[in-house]
Image 1 (cartoon, rainbow, N blue to C red):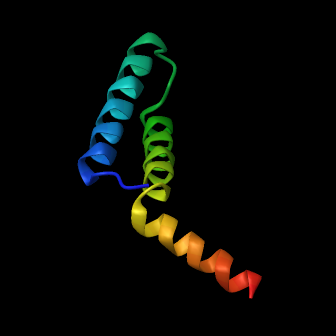
Image 2: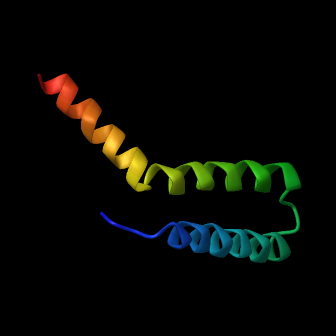
Length: 65
């Protein structure tokens, strides 16, 4: 799973724009909720970087031994 770092950055930017569009459509959303959603989304995107995937593979191989 070789991806370039800018792909993750683009995914974060697109996700931020989508959240802003949803904020305009649904006025009852609070800024705090949007920040929490964006942080959780950033963690989800970070989980799919090469470093984290390699760490997960190492942990799984360590558990299997």
